[in-house]
Image 1: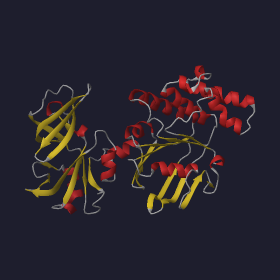
Image 2: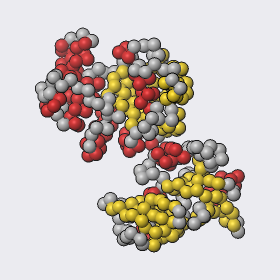
Image 3: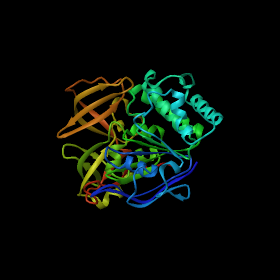
Length: 377
């Protein structure tokens, strides 16, 4: 078991910067998820740690040891890929034992490790089967088992659930979380799926275009994103964004989105005094837009006139795709809501929970200014 540290790590492929000045400290026994869209550098960062890519600048440490020049086989890590990469002519037992046999482990130790790992993963009854006789989920468990028998300091997972169907992904997510709790080993997991990141991680590192955007716990990333990219990436459906301005009339502060406006609560007015009259981006999550009839009690609600464009019944909730002027946005509302295409209704914006981003500070990825209600002591 060991911590992992990236110190000013760069990885370039010619003129293309895949990872840019990455500084990241991963604690011992932590379950850290690297998340971001395709091409953001997350897999490259993982491969640099595994030794499958040579870093251009910086240092990678496992524990207190710099491993830049250490061969992959000597880094005491185990990696599980998106592809199961099982040997088709070998049994499950032999697939799991193969790496140990290459390292000249004795037969009793191999047998102990394989059987213990199989019991941990619930595949002890499959040890004599060939990969072609297994389901996708069973093959993935064998691939994880092959990593477990190594008893490494660090486990690396590169989108291991991408080939599974939706139901099996949910089941395997839970199994991996339980496995981490049992093994008490450092897990570093790469995915583009923010749901996987939110449900499994101790902390999440959000990456985009090779740059680490924010590192924190899932709840902090959801509640307090530092910039527009993180706000839009974390959460499903994604946060709604509106171009607007902060205006003041008769002593009241509003966010004016041209075709509608919402009043800024008193607790946030001071934060926005420096950007009055400036172009801003207003962000609010779909779950903070309610049917007024079923809105949570005690919220600061601002009513907005909308037209219903699409309804999606999800069983325990309804997704409404709404239109106001040129604005299209999404709401997650109570399943008792009775609306149809073309209906003109009002929705309640929960102004306890909103975000303001300032494009003047960074046009490509505006940082957050404020908008989340302070927690009460």
